[in-house]
Amino acid sequence: EECCVVFRDEFRQALGGQEVLPDNWTTTANVIRETGRRVLGVSSGRKVDKETWWWNEELPECIQRKRLAKKKWDTESTEESNQEYREMKCKVKVEVAKAKQRA
Image 1 (cartoon, rainbow, N blue to C red):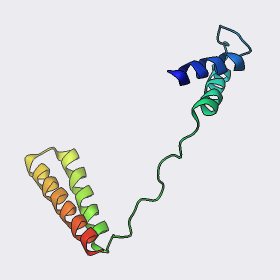
Image 2 (cartoon, rainbow, N blue to C red; image 1 turned 180 degrees about the horizontal axis):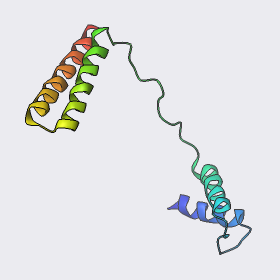
Image 3 (spheres, rainbow, N blue to C red; image 1 turned 90 degrees about the vertical axis):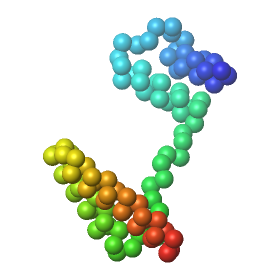
């Protein structure tokens, strides 16, 4: 609630006290972004590096086989390919759990 009021006041001040938005969308968008950064701050963003220290040599191969099974299921849409994909998905989950446990 308070941030909303502060944002509205800062936004109007950035527009020079005008009540009507400028016709130029780029200008308006930039003013909104800058005001948002000043009032609300900036988040740190996503974590770039996912933890893969526990990966072993077999995991990429296993995941690749699962991806191929998924592509096959997407193109064929048969019950057999669906079953194959589900089995591969379970197998990958088990392999990942084992790799994490070993690490």
